[in-house]
Image 1: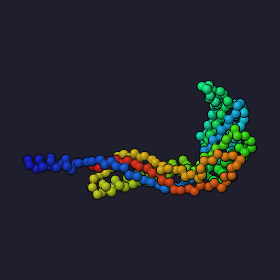
Image 2: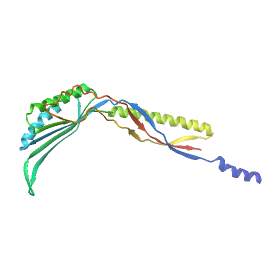
Image 3: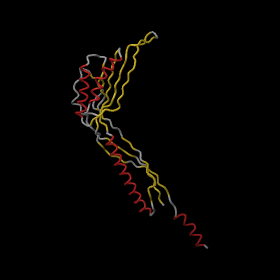
Image 4: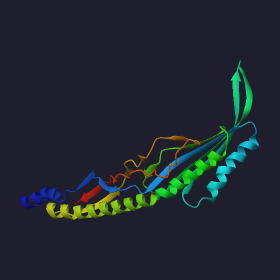
Length: 228
C-alpha cells in the first residue's frame, strides 16, 4: 500500500510542463537604394483657365517622363480671397500640383529636377512657384520586403534550433507553439540638401548626389515554447 501512495505522489512531478514566452530582436544592416524628392508647383491667377494652362506645362512633362518614378500625385484648385473691414474680396485662384519623384539613379533624378527648373525659368512671372524638397535616400519597398523575408527566415531557424537545444538540456520535449513578428525600419532618410525655392537664379542641381548611409531593418518576434 505504501508503494502505491509513493507512485501517486511522484507522477505529478514527472508530468510537469511549462510555457516559455519571450522576445528576441533580429537586425540587418542595409544601404538605402532609392533617391526621393517632393515637388510642389503653385500657380496664382485671376482666371481659373490661366491657372490650368500653367499647371499643364508641368503636368505634360511629368506624364511624358520616362526617367523617374512619379507617385502620390495630387492637384487642387481653390479660390483665393482678401479680407479687410470684415469683408472678403475674391482675388483669383490658387492651383497646387504635388507629387513625389523617385529614382535609383542620381543622374536621372537630377536631370528630371533640372528640366523642371527650365520649365519654370521659361515662365516669366512670379505667379508660378516651384519648390523641390530635400533629396533623400530611402529604402525601396523591394529591398525592405526582401530584408524582412531574410530576417523572418533567420528568426524561424533560430527558434527551431533553440527549441532542440532546450529539449536536450532539460530532457524535455520543447516545441514552438507560436511566433508573432513585429517589423521595424529604423529610419530611412538621409538629407542631401535643404529645401529650395527654385527660380531663374537657381544653380543646376546635376551635381546633387547625397551620400548613402547604412540603416537598420529590425524584427522583434515574440516566441512561445511549450515544454513537456
